[in-house]
Image 1: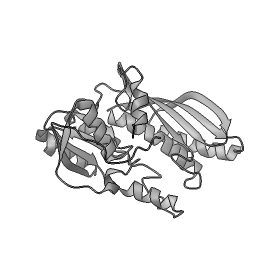
Image 2: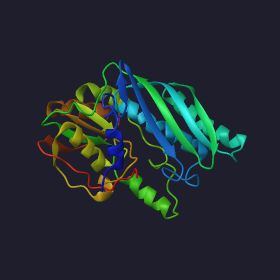
Image 3: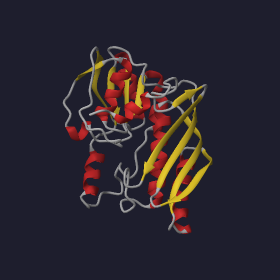
Image 4: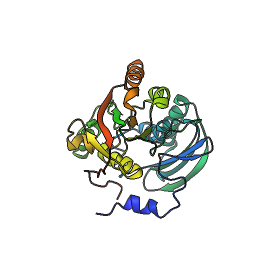
Length: 273
């Protein structure tokens, strides 16, 4: 089956396309959509949680590029029957994220509709961006945190079951402090938004490499999307330093593969179309 997302992106000039954000000078521009009945149902989360998560998934892109958010533009389609109380709840979620990560919401656009759909552009600043295409042959490949719980919780929600309010599906656990300190020792990185396997295939394609795995993973781990953990590569000589920084920030890391010659294809179904 054709990867429609990759096909559509391939139609455009690739000068700035291919990373979690577009690097222009010392600025990084990133955008994500967060749409009702695609990414969430309103019965699953409060409006404040929805707004807050919509910001976090965008901030995640900035973090993995070693960039710090400065400004945000907010585009939002608000159901026409929303009350001022409901709009205030959305505001509290957006504002909470902007205060927590120290950036300013500078404008955007609103429109009425039947569903709640959010589009956010984050403008960040970096002196040394971390990109996807700078990995080296022989690099170790690792990820932060634990994978699989988001898919489990999403399956539960789809089966009309309740999940913990501490679930990463509701509130992604970003590792900003860890990544900003570890970035000088990393060659390539991206956030795990579409599942470990899919995001590994992106690294494989853009760099023309394969991976030698040190361990076997279940499909629940390989295909669990919206984890927003960090997938990264680094030279083996930096392992001790990276583990030291991870311990300092109470961040679990799993080193699971090595970059080799070859290719790697995602083992998961496409989820954008």
